[in-house]
Image (cartoon, rainbow over all chains, first blue to last red; front, side):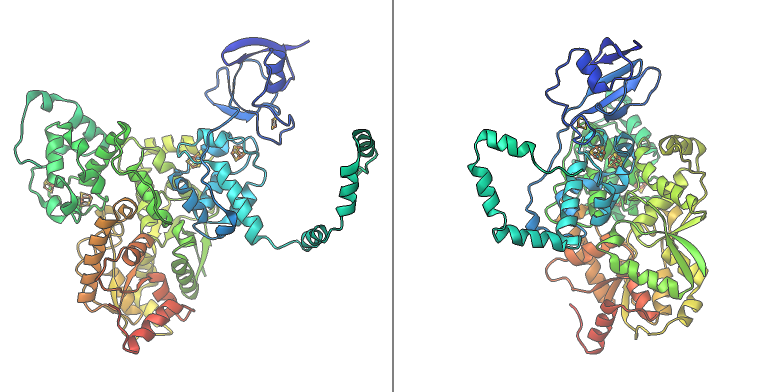
Length: 223
Length: 131
Length: 279
Ligand code: SF4
Ligand code: SF4
Ligand code: SF4
Ligand code: SF4
Ligand code: FES
């Protein structure tokens, strides 16, 4: 079996080549209760930074998506403290200064592009910050659609911006106020409110455990 | 500011004046205290030391220059620099004092926006007044 | 049609939309095909004056790099602050060692230097010309009395001044070419207080009171500026008792005079001809 040496929080381990960082950590004996979620590159819980021997760059990526390399120095960043002011979406308007008023630190961006280099999703993070600054809400929503809120950009930003909270607000504003309404959703909501599914729900609620398990196993699954 | 100056060898030899010179790129000793900068500064009324007095403190190596309000009231309008007969760009000296103070953790004018502001107001305030 | 790379800046996409809309409508009528530079970022507003603050120059230089990428050799700015920061940063990286250090942050791209930053006022004076501008006027400003307000960054430091820093005339000449009347305005080169508006409101109110009284004393009906921060301060930081002059962007005057739709100028002119004077 091919093996490589990695350093996890400063301690060296021999691990099989080809493992992801996350699996290598588990192989080395770590039991991950934080910094691990979906294992599929969607949840953003496994933010990790590393360096490679002889290379000045500090790399940032998702532990569940990145293969170990020989001589990797690894540290996980399971959580990035980030500031999100309280707001009520219904009281906000999707207009120029909404994002900047709630996140005035956006104005501290020096356009260094460090955030973009850190993003494991390869988003144009700096462009999204700049779009936020100038109030282009649909632009921000578009640029950050694939953000997994890993916080790596936030950790590296010299302007101390809480990026993913800005993105989330932009997408909420975009969805609530700027995107055309989908008629089928309204129709389904009306059906739900009209009690169309009441009887079926009541039937489920009345089932015992075994009956419920059987029904679950027999459910229709889209191919 | 008191008009009395207390000179000492220690102050003059202190690295403070040189550090301000390095950061600002302006030679504080070029200033001959004519006061034209202060006469033209639109914010002089709100300063606890006039621009020429700020420069004097720097010349004397006096770190009291770091606890003045003047650098925080200075808006980098460059009205002083264009009229200085010695070509001193005092706005740069003011910037050096702000930068030095901020790097030492002195933040006398925290930026806490109380209403929506145009981008350029916030960008300017954060860049000049926060570390 | 002459192409012209254009850097809008954040404020022109938001609070100062009227300036952008007006100027672009006017420039189209003057035969320019204005091309907004792709993926521009904030210029930084206030040029960093500290010697060891290289990072603050990366943003403005990145914009020059984008202009280079368009194959253009110069870039137009409307906002006075953007003009100040971009033109000074362009000069800053004329030094090869500084350029090398900044390019290390822009890698794999590299700025080669040489992009010229022009402000709308110099474009109108040096390339369009006052006479050609006057010849394009479709709708005279009816002698609207204008206080042309320069503020700081259009004139200072000297090396970046769009005109004589001790006695500028360019904005007045443009106003006159459009059929307006430029009034004497002794405080026109004085600072409004700029970003101090966030932290020291009272200081800015003091400045704005003086500016507005000076403009009014000259007989102005409106104040005209190219700076969105001046515009904000003059309207939002007006102390009680100071004349409430409307504060318009130069782009709005241009648009109106060249025949584009511009309700704010129309309202100001109607207000004056019907005898309603502000303040
Ligand atoms: S934008 Fe930031 S938080 Fe979102 S995925 Fe990229 S690095 Fe993570
Ligand atoms: S890391 Fe921060 S300061 Fe740098 S470009 Fe991104 S948001 Fe702006
Ligand atoms: S104008 Fe110049 S020489 Fe005169 S006091 Fe000010 S800095 Fe000194
Ligand atoms: S740059 Fe500062 S010190 Fe100089 S005139 Fe302007 S406000 Fe005064
Ligand atoms: S564990 Fe969810 S993205 Fe890696």
